[in-house]
Length: 348
Ligand code: PEP
Ligand code: MN
Image 1 (cartoon, rainbow, N blue to C red):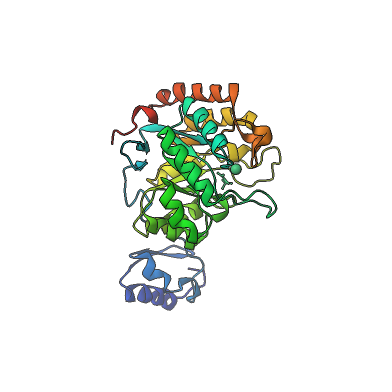
Image 2: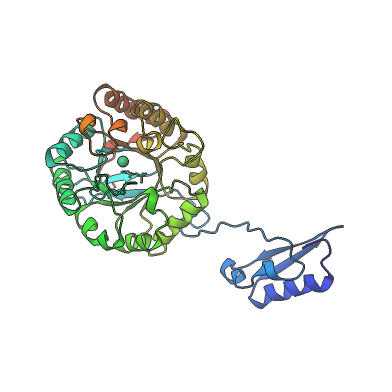
């Protein structure tokens, strides 16, 4: 309460709080009175507490998200990706494993996708990525192959036995993407597209939710809450760099987001060093950092011929860089108490 709030002002706040079933604990100091509220947050919202006379400020103590919070679910979750059965394995993403996901930024052709998938798989990746709908900054840039891209991705997933993750940019495309993929990706530009989040939630498919490039961690978790609220808790968060004043990397990888998220949410969290850096020379060091900080996995761009890539060639790995990444993904997770996910594939 402000220093000049009267006893009546305090009594009025208490009365309003009690009128919606809450409890108010008044603590009177020499200069100020503080009122602590206990009860249902939603019912307090309707009170417009900031508008009551004598109220100086209102601070929320509890998390604004519920379903994705560790207050709701203390144990960290594991999300399984893949339909299972003969041609398609089930891959865990969670606290005991380290899951390496890789593939081309965009699906360009059956040959390019298969070659990239084989490169990813021989480096130890267990989930294949690849975009069929590309959310490009420019409307003149390659927009992806659409449904044809989904078909190619599904074929390559079946040929390699790798579950596939691909981006969906429009709520209307959720059914067709869900039909072809094992996990729906929601990209940085759509993190706050609430209709899309709800449609992805309704699909019942695992969702890879990237952090908005200008989103706070709380906003990102609220976006995940939109999916969870539709009864879908199979959400994996992906830190992919945020916009800062630093121009030497495309984005600034917020590595501290990983342990911050893990302390407050039970959802798995992975890192995308490729889209964070935008430069292939930083992908291996940032991947090592992701493993060391305790990320539940990484997602990395690879391409058989980055020079001709239709999207994000400068960040795609191949050759020695990919071998170096493969070695890091094999050696480092056990150092931080995790098994590589390919050792647990299908062992649900
Ligand atoms: C991508 O993964 O292909 C992509 C477009 O990523 P982001 O949404 O993080 O930019
Ligand atoms: Mn990309």
